[in-house]
Length: 122
Image 1 (cartoon, rainbow, N blue to C red):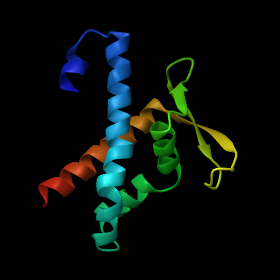
Image 2 (tube, rainbow, N blue to C red; image 1 turned 180 degrees about the horizontal axis):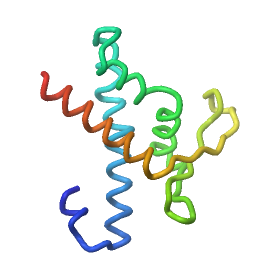
Image 3 (tube, rainbow, N blue to C red; image 1 turned 30 degrees about the vertical axis):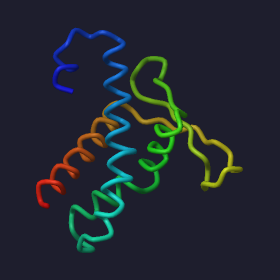
Image 4 (tube, helix red, strand yellow; image 1 turned 135 degrees about the vertical axis):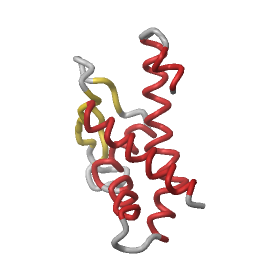
């Protein structure tokens, strides 16, 4: 990620970076870390609240969109549009959502920070 950030702004590298970072932060870490970690932490701990935020509602819908390729950049590249099933279930309709770049950067930073803290604390 450091190399990609320091490289010239080649669109292919930027897209690869976005896809990789979103997959790691929201699919891989959620499924391999945040769900189990959230079950084991004290109820009022900050780490449990972070795991709860990263595995529930809006972020979970974004995770599903990333995992199933139901997303694309907004036309002005100010964020991402994504689609998730309303209420879950295979027959539920797909609802449109969007996340702006500032909120997405926060979600990514929170995911990385929570994972770093969890793995360093082991």
